[in-house]
Image (cartoon, rainbow, N blue to C red; front, side):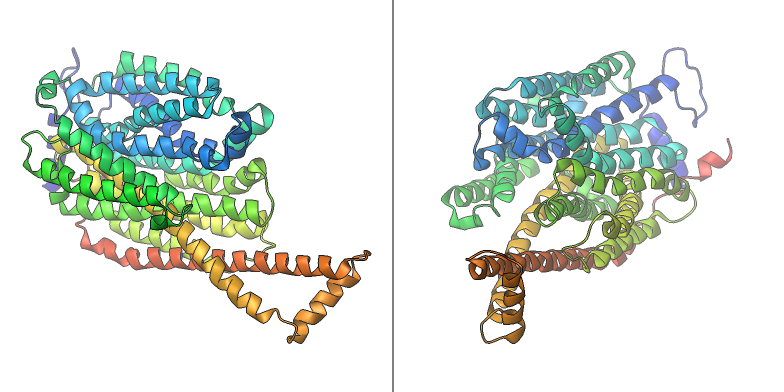
Length: 534
């Protein structure tokens, strides 16, 4: 009965195609399928563009003659703008319609990518990256909402893994793609690579998307006050989370000011959302228990997805001395695992309770991090293989069912806003996770170095013997001083490795704690029932 109601609601949301007649409920129009695949590719570009750039910041810094502090704004500007666009996309999709909304976003993203590649100064790059992030951010939730609006429930086991694959694969293979492009061509091609696909996606969106109709009357009641305070709230929050660890949080006056602006803007924004007749963001979706709890799990998944994609390259760069290309090749294991797991996950979605799959996914990610707690300075591709396979498998087993559980129970009129909010929680989880992991890593490095330095004294025989052995290998007059320097570099390296082990343990506990909480959610309607009769 529940499945029938869901199916009916989904069918009612679909406008009939001219001349289509009374098509079977399970039939998916090929035109819409091609349009949806084009949208998925646009979403893939938006996701990929974050990570390909992060792997080559040093090359961009050299090319634009920027300082190390300035070059971080290549990422910060994008993320600040994107986090504002994601919740706004729900309103724009309803007002403009999916066709105009997505085609405009794809075209704008393509133009902004071209201008980023042509930038000759850091100021130009920051402006175009912000525009690229704002426009690209609108594509992501539109894809999620369209999947549940145009496909019947019996097709969700195929569509949901596809979205999950795009959402998880792009951040994972980003360093690989970025490393290859920068190494083979130049950093400009990190942006130029979007141009041809962007044009094709734009043309496909204009020609094929017919999922809904625009409602331009919504602009007559557009909440400019809500938009202003939402932008201040989310933009400054993203800035605080991005730059806070780098500048010791509230010890820096700019970070402290941004935090105050974010907190005060949040108060005004939520007051406005709860009282305005036509709020810029509709929070009614959170009254659905599955959506509210699913957003919480999405937040934690964001920590795991973006946090672990950050930790591994930092370890390989700092400890192993890998360049962007070698880091990308090493991390490709997770991406390949996700790709291989996608059809398996799609099949299982029709067979077992998706809550069980979500719990299993969280448990596998926890196991992946537990394996990584044994990390040493000598870990390389071989040693990282198993943790990466487990991470890729766990993330795919988690992100597919959580998308289905969270968005699959929403009413059709809540899907567009709900999709924006759902994606926002994942991005905020990533931002909070990166800030938290950076802070914990720095604190644990300081702690381990303090403890190790206390044990490296002239009173400890093993330390004196190690110093003597190092000095004996250095055929120079200042061998003692050189040996002392090498010893302290070795100690620092060990302290960093121990800090990484602590962070992996923290991530393990986080996912382990959340795994059993999946049973607080209701089981969604089975997806396989409709498929069985066709």
